[in-house]
Amino acid sequence: SATAFTGWIRRAHRALKRVKEFDEEFNERAVAEDAEQDEKLKKLMSDLSNEMLLRADYFDQLIRCFYDFYQKQLENESV
Image (cartoon, rainbow, N blue to C red):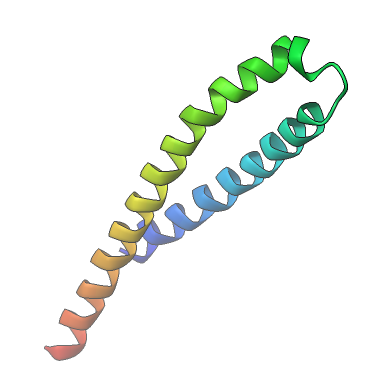
């Protein structure tokens, strides 16, 4: 439905905002002089692997949702 699709778009927008904040902190810490001893950076690097998997999964879900929505629209137009 259009409501579900709108919900997906809102969630994607919030997720992209969080990703941007994550990326900014990661980049800032990665170029610091004490990067090798930075425990927070090590955790961010670990989180980055998980985040990449989540991004891929979320993008896949968003595409599937859009595809289903588009297919229903086509079916409704052809009736």
